[in-house]
Image (cartoon, rainbow, N blue to C red; front, side, top):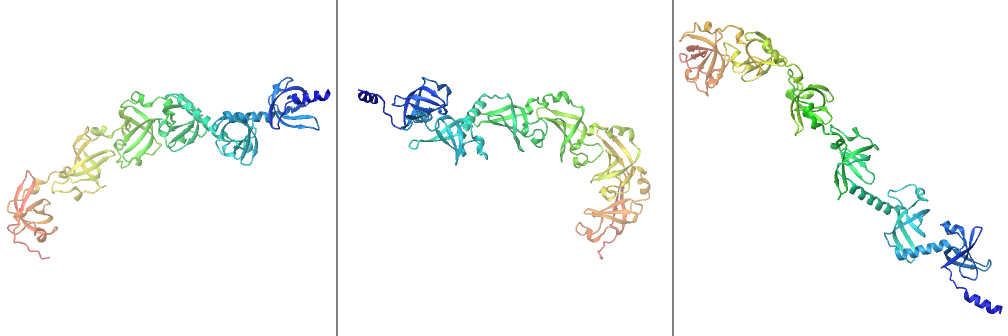
Length: 523
């Protein structure tokens, strides 16, 4: 009877294969083991360390376990809950997951070429895919829980390759997209200075970067962005441009304050005298900063009343503090014309008091032209001696024949026009006009000796013994023509002439050589 009962009992027990996952019920807890009934001829044992969820460790609880083997020696079935869980995960992977699926796991071991990750089963994480940036310390990732992307599933070998780098990259991209979609122009956001270049500053905005161009850092003049920002510095900046397709964000720092040009006409009215700083010097003038973002130009002609400035650098240096007067404002064009000399006294304002017609003055020859000489009477005040006012007795063709630069001369004031800043001067007026006295004995036909002073194509200029100069026209020289005039006559030679005519109104003496023999060149 007992034999038949034993046979029936054996038949009622299920038959299991090693590696098979079966359901069991916890019937007791003994020390560090759970005793599990799986409907087999013997109970099974599962070590408590295999339970990842302690709430599952209770009598009467049902669990999945993997049938490993039967121990005849102990009379117990060796079970594994961990392997059953991994088997279930693998089955789920086969049924539900594919390459690109996101899974959660924990990096628990470093191996050759990478790491092992527990995602409910073992997965391989290549070292190159552990982080966005290469790392020199792989151990820092041990114990890190994270999400991963399945890169490859090998069904035959039951191998899974995952990537933490790709997950972080995807997460960053999604955050960047969300960030840029939420941005609006004019919005003030906080960022950290990430990089400084010659053309601007790159800001780390958290999920993406933005650029502050050097022109948007300050309303004032900048040589380099490092003048106002530092690496790692946190700043509030204004979003001034968004390109959502290229995900480029333009930022501004100066836009946090109002444009100083908006109030420029109120602060710097024409005629106002203010102080500024020289920030740039060019051949045609100097730029002066009145305040950050507001500069004006002092043209070279507005630098000094008294000095002849060839280049602004002769009297100014970058960084100089100067007093200037506002001459003109073009707010739309953002241009201000300034003057430095207008902040000083104009020497011409006292000219009418200091220089009266008829006054004898002294000056220095500053410049010579074909029509006269400019004489500096004092710094900033020049007068003009016309060529006709140099000599009573000589017809001066070029002032340089009589005067030279730097020469000190005495003159007489002939006229003053203070508004147009002109003074007429004369040299010959310092002496009485000798014309009448010198020509009183010159009668028509009088033969006299003179000296050739100049030879021109229309005749000879001859200085007479009394110092006056007369002209022998070519028509009054027998046998002369323009071709042989210089051949037959030479400057400095003595010559016999006769008075032909005296024009007192025009102060001209006409001479003739018709009474003299035709000369021949003996040289």
